[in-house]
Image 1: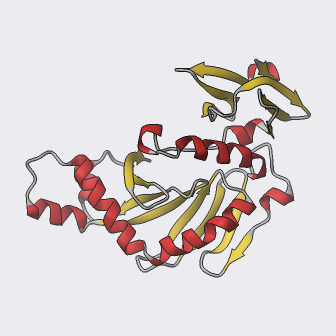
Image 2: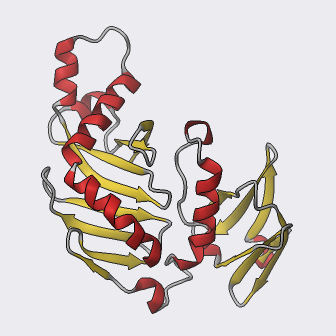
Amino acid sequence: MQVLDGQVTIETIDEHQYVKIVGFGASTLRELPDTFHVVTLEQSKGLVTLRADDGSQVCATPGQLALPGIVIPADLNPDHQDHLEAELFGLATVPALDADSPKLTTPVDDDVLGRIIFDPVDGVVADDVPTALGTISIRFWAAGHARVHTLLPLTHELVDQLPAVLDAAVEFLWKWGATGGDTSESHEHFVGNFGVHTLSVYHSGAFCVELSDDKTVFAESFLPGYRPAVHFLPDGTPVFVTIEC
C-alpha cells in the first residue's frame, strides 16, 4: 500500500505495522497500534487516510504522520499500545509543515507557562518559563490545542515540583551510567552539576527532562554538543535515557 508516489507506505516489522513517511528531509517510521490494522491507504488533496479492518480511520497530512512521537520503548511502558492509539487519533490536530491553518497554530496564553506557541516548524513550545531552577523551555510532543489543555495541570505540577523531578532524573542517570567502581565523592560531584534545559511533555502524559550542565560533568562524560535526557512514565517513574544534541 502506498500513496503520494511512495511518500507514504505501510510496512510490517516483527508483526507490527508502521506507517513510513519519506519527505521533509528524512524518512520516518511511526508505529501503529495493534488494534488499528490498516487495510487501505488513500490520498486526496494532501491528506492521507489510513483505514483499519474494523472500519475506523485516521485522516492526517504526511507531515502530521511524520511528527515525533512516542520515545519510551514498548518493553518499558506497560501502556504502550494505549498510548500509540491515543496519539495516532490526535495527529490531525497538531501543526506540521503541511498543516499550518490558524485553527492549528493559534497561540495559547497560560498563567503558569506564559505564551504557548503552536508552530509548524518549531513545534508546540513555551519558552522562558520561570521555575525554581531558573527559566526553561517546555515542549509538548504530538499534542494539539485540546490535548495541551488537558496536559496543563500535569505540566503545572511538574513545574512546581521541578527540583524533585531533576533529582530523580539525575539519580537515574547516575545509576544508568555507573561502572561499579564509583565513590560517594564522585556521586556527590555528579548529582550536583545538573540543571534543566527543557521539559518535554508527551501526548500520553509521559515526560522527559533534558539536562543542562553549568559546570564540568558534560565535558567529562559526553561528547561536545550532546546532553542526556531522562524519560519518565506518566506515573513519574524514570525508565529510559537518550542522548540529545
